[in-house]
Length: 509
Ligand code: SAH
Picture 1 (spheres, rainbow, N blue to C red):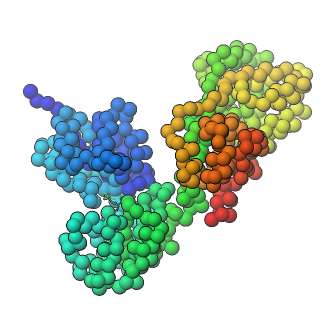
Picture 2: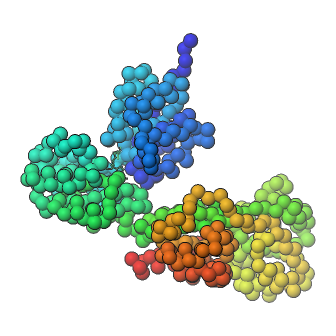
């Protein structure tokens, strides 16, 4: 009986930054039945595999050893023979000190078809992100990539040849032996003042680079606490770093941010932090819960939309749920044609626009008082306002407007505490790993404090982390909870918050 044979793809996942994956790598990941991956691979790449894909980790983890290479080889053969499409995902490029060659040879011998999908190796990509081009016409017309894993002695490398090179030398897996490597090169005639660098966790938000000379780089790297995984680079090209560094010179580089918004709304802030070089940790403190009975009330209001003259939407969540209700009723934005539509906040206005509705009124400041000031003079006793919004919203707007005309406030959703989180932020704070905690509403502040627990103010005080607030209401809540307001946005938007944080980072750089 013939059995379908699968295929194994030896895929290079790139050297850290998840966007350094090739299009082909992404395509095979999204179609595979099993993925076999190890420690150097960025876990973010696993987001491309399907939900039912088998995930097999074979790297080193804390006290556990990595699966031995021959067992990995046999695992790949077995999966292939089961007829599966398999991705063997590796850091950098599989054939650069990745043992991909050994796996390919074993698959070939077993008659299991395979392909190699090259990846961006740390040798090239890691150096590039540190601002070091591996060659340059003026100073390096060749390069050598060398293992720094010296087994029992250093004798198996040809030191006189390495020391005589006019090109760039890159040592991988060399941190344990950095003293031996540098002294062997000097002993064999390389100039002690040759430029050198160590680049750790290249292309990630934790990238660290130390530069020096062949004579002092080992000591400098040690003083800076640089361990594996790191690249040791020796050659004149290191001197170009100050002109070519782009990655670690971005304004938020090296800073760690906790984002407390809901999972659904975090992405915009996360992207902005990452674009400026910061590391964003998602720690959702709230989630949006539509209230079914109130959504039904909204449905009846929509059935009688002709009775209303105004619609006020005060949040993106409100807009999304309003249009969901319209859609569920088989209606669309034309339902709003006779109404004056008001949006509080730029983001709310943008959400409305994405549904094809340009709001008639957008108060200049993004708080309730501004809305009442601006809309109040336009209203007469004959007007009737539909106000679908959050159960947690302040009473102020509804109260003030009700004094002027009829207001139907429908509390279509509530903001609940999100208890599903993957990170232990209290531990990160205690370890002083967090630089900023971002609060984009008073509820995020309230539930953040609840989640961290009673000792939250003390933990934050001792952590060195700063609390960044989007506006006065959020700041008020933070203070009421005993938390500091180190930064408050001038404009009460995500962009305003980012601008305030950036200014703080630059000031304290
Ligand atoms: N196949 C990989 C290399 C595997 S060997 C590649 O092509 O990049 C493992 C060594 O690679 C580490 O010890 C370290 O020297 C280097 N390395 C891999 N990723 C790195 C990174 N992001 N930053 C610095 N060094 C890295």
